Every structure is written in structure tokens, then in C-alpha cells.
Amino acid sequence: MKITNDILYVGVNDHDVDLFEGHYIVPEGMAYNSYVIKSGKTAVMDSVDEHFADEWIGKVKEAAGSPDYFIVQHMEPDHSGSVKKFMDAFPETTIVSSQKAFNMMANFFEGEDFADRRLAVTEGDTLDLEGHTLAFVTAPMVHWPEVIMTYDATDKVLFSADAFGRFGALDTIGYTNEEDDDWACEARRYYFGIVGKYGPQTQAVLKKAAGLDIEKICALHGPILVKDLGYHLGLYDTWSKYEPESKGVLIAYTSVYGHTKKAVEMLAELLEAKGVPTVEVTDLARSDMAEAVEDAFRYDTVVFATTTFNNSIFPFMREFIESLTERSYQNRRLAFIENGSWAPQAAKIMKGMFEGSKNMTYCDDNVKILSALNDQSRAQVEALAEEIAAAYK
Image (tube, rainbow, N blue to C red):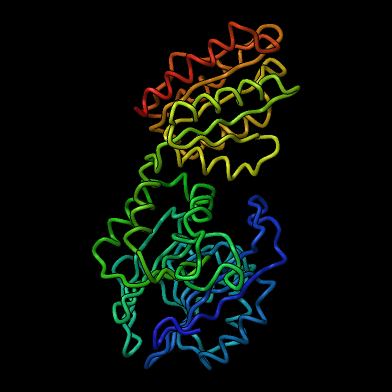
């Protein structure tokens, strides 16, 4: 597939994977993207998962013959898994990467760091392909420390490593974002799951990108971005600042015997009736946790509802809150619904888990359920709904 006259797509699609990184559900599969730049000299951009090495190397041979350069931007095994096989297949090729990446290669490939045919690059270095000039941009902790991105000044293409990626095989979702109707949803889940902890580092890279004339973005996962680049860059700016993307309420809950669920359903109905823009309800025991995390970062208000359990809180709720706080969750309005048949303390515990979070606003009207809803706790639900809805008027 041609991206420009001189840049070709040679990636592969994986429909066998069920959990990406052993963690994220990927019902549409995954793409491991790789690119060839054909100029006076030829460069290959990044490898693929080792299970697809032979298929990928075949594509490279067909597109590039014997490449002059092999650029490795990121050493995570879904991209570096075929590096050794590539270098064996093309013994005259020079491998180009950061010094930290070469250090990692020695770990992944039993001491092999290609010292006799490597070129280490860093911020501001360039590579002349005799017709195309590549400039390297360091992107540490977006989302590994060795990451570099590459800008082709000739065709105005940014090769962005894992940034701007999304879940999904390209033969399912489309090879460019002109065909992909769901980029933001799956890119959001991808970003907050994989990159989200590193907002300041992402901001640093966005500032570098602002100085480049970019017409296309080629990530290591997901479709090539060929339109609406301002929209995509804007979302990354919002996400990496930990700012809410949309006005709305996420109610995330666990319920043992259904009583907490009834309170959640009552609250959701009241919020919708009072005109809150969007109300999402997530049962943490039955939902994809990564989807719940995505929604918590998307909306400006989150209600946490759970039971006191083993003198703490229900495990799915603990996992959810820890997934948020370890990703530097901040700048939100929070409310709590707790349930307990004796000594309820879930609200206190949940709020305490956010002690280190920045710029949190807490609702005054929280809800305490003693086993099941009664007139008093229903009145508390109504008061909470009124307080939340007032913020959107």
C-alpha cells in the first residue's frame, strides 16, 4: 500500500491475539505497522511481532529489495520481536536507533547489539536517504525510555512510534483514518491504558511536533492519519493535560446483591431527567476495565459506588481506582455511594485513595446505604443528583 509516492506500508495484521500486552481486550485484533521509504537509499521503519517475522520480511523484500537502513524506534516486543531475524536476512543493512534501544537489544537478543553495523542517533540528528531527509525526535517515556520518533521532511510525515495508535487490525478497521469511524474511542482506550501515566512527557513531544509541518502521521498501531490532524493532535493535548474531554457523568459501581445497583439506576435516571449532557453507567465486575478507565478520563464527573468488603472495598472498585491513580488521575469532580450492613466505610476508603490526586472537587451530598435503599438514602440520592446536575446548568 502506498502512503506517498516513496513511502509504502508493509505491516501485518494479527487476528489471533485476544489480549494485547496480556491485558487489553482486542476484539478487532491488532496491527503491527512497518513502513518502507524508497529514495536514493532505502529505509525500513520498525519491525513486527516475532510471530509474523517471515510474512513481514517477505513484504520488505518485495517492497525494498535489500534496504540500506533499518530504523528501530521502539523496543517493545510487538515491534522489536523480528529485529534479529531481519538483521540476519539483510546482513548489509545498517540498524539505526537510540543508544538506549541498543542496550535493550542486548537484553532481548542474548547479548547481540549489532555493534559492527549500527548507527546511534539522538535529538536533532538527521539521516540523508539521498532524496529524503529524516530527522530524529527523542520521545522518552512515550511510553518507554528509548523511544525515538522520525520526521520525513520531504513528504512531511511523522513516524510517531506508539503515539497516536489505536487497537484494531487494519484489514478490519481500515488502513487510513478516512475509513476508520471509531478512531477516537479506541485511541482513547489505547492512550489511557498504555501511555496515560506519561502526560508531561507526551506534552513535551507535542511541543516538538508543533514546530514541524506534518501532513500525515504513521503510528506503530492503527491507521495512518491523513485527515483532521488538528483534531487528533488536539485530543492528545487534552488527554496528556489530564483535562476532561467531554461534559458528562460516569457512574462506576459494584453490587453484591443488587441494592447498590438500584441506587445507581435511580441516580442515573434522575441525572438524565435533570438534563445532564451524558450519563454512562459501568458495572465494574462485568465491563472491560480499560473501557471504564477510558470513560473516567473522558468525562468531568465520576460517581464511585461500592460496598464495604472485608473491611475495605470491593476488589473491582479497588482495581478501578488504582488504575486511575497510577495514571495520574486529576482535574475531576467526584462523588461516592457506599453500602454496608454494618460499619460502612467504603466512601472514606475510596476518597482516601485519591489523597495524592491533584485538583479534585468532591461533592457534598454523598450517599450511605445501610443494606438496602430506604427513604433516607433515597433522599440522599436525590440530593446528589441535584448537586451534580446544578454544575451543568
